Length: 96
Image 1: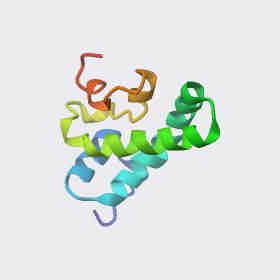
Image 2: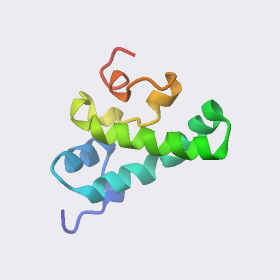
Image 3: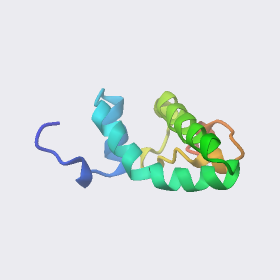
Image 4: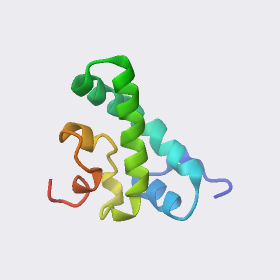
């Protein structure tokens, strides 16, 4: 999207943009959420290398399952970390 600042778009708008092929929108989702995902990962994993791997895995799974997300405004790549590393799609499906 030319002329649209991604800083002004909601998670739902960014998810829609990623679904439409805008790779830059996923970079913006990453930038928006990476700090909170890193905090959760550090609490769960408790070592720097493992934390980095968990963050990377969490975002990779979030991207892989983005089309499964029923409520794009509830994008939460760290959800799988807080649920003990289960699939992130269970987080966005309203069931837990």
